[in-house]
Length: 417
Image 1 (tube, rainbow, N blue to C red):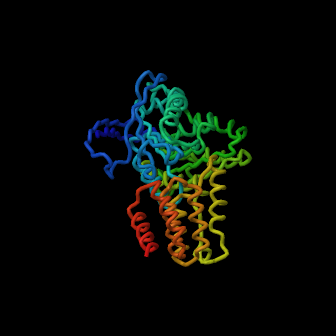
Image 2 (cartoon, rainbow, N blue to C red):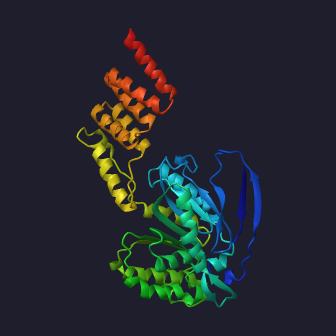
Image 3 (tube, rainbow, N blue to C red):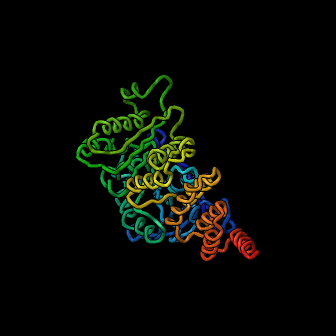
């Protein structure tokens, strides 16, 4: 299988740097075996009538779905990621880590590759780059009318979508947040270039923010430290030089957001004193996703696990009802999560709790042989061989599990004696 990697380097956070940006584009073909553990995703080419050309995206399907398009294993929220070639691997790693830690649902990541980055991530013009005319409206039209419908039709998606961008990508995210707030559920701007076009986005925000209803929407903004020694986020606001325009415009936008609490926006910003424009991407992406999905983690204390009156199954159902309300679609407790809790209860001889958990897992995953196998283990432990045999047999009708087959044969042999 061939993977085409596009590598480029850009630094456009502030005007003095912007004019000296050098774009280095390379195409590297790497031969890799299928199912390589080092493969984070694949490249796909999408025809675009809006652009009159083919567009490339990088796609990651959650490991829990086997990394492929199969739709009957589950459906997933989608992260749409600008500057995909620079940000794809970090966001994929973050989402998989958070999923494994039960901090967020498994997610599809779509890394969008820009063919003309400066033009596609801006609108209008800027006096420092008089030859550049922004085509951001056309680019967002492609995302809305061609890319999102294609991803939804081709991959196992849900309705929940997140939009992430850094630098000029952050500018695009905020443009979309202000002018098309219903296109995504959550928005992440990392060091957004709000200085573009004489700070047009900041001026527009002052008029738009008081009038919008952002109920159900989430926004995270990250800003980094590019200031001189001795300057802080308060004193920098008095400066007027181009070198501080990026942080000043972000701070002004954040101030306007904070004034408009009646618009029901769920919002957080973070200033990273020890990070600069490039380095803030990784930590900002992680903190943003932690904030967006802070409702997802289920906290159960050890004392509660030991309490015989603590209704684990009821807590799980109630928690994921809240998660479902936040995400806008039905989310059930994860099979592995419930299974692990069930075996914890089995190990401490809390058989009634274990049984309710294993049965809850079967109700949510009726086609999982592993769920029936687990319930069979419970009945072996409690001495109910008839029900154990029944569940092991059911498990084997759904999936050929060698361990289950061995356990079933052992029980049948014992019954014959």
